[in-house]
Image (tube, rainbow, N blue to C red; front, side, top):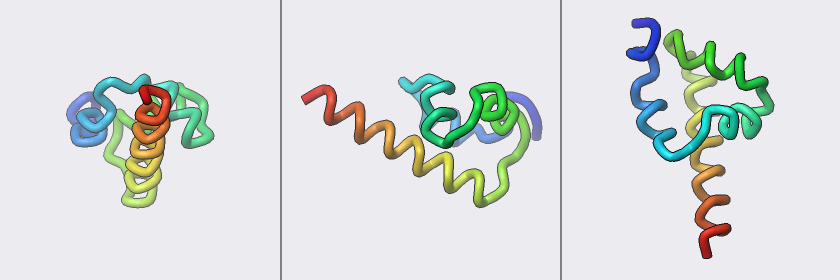
Length: 65
């Protein structure tokens, strides 16, 4: 699968977050992260991305308090 169908679960997890936020948390340029989303991710990339999303969610929760 390629395009928007690739990494659908990652896209679902990102709801409410901006792609550039996840990219910067990963230490990537937003265009690089965008390319990551268009092709199936390796397990390493998927795990790194999930960790970054979790980290952003925690940061957002702390700010909301």
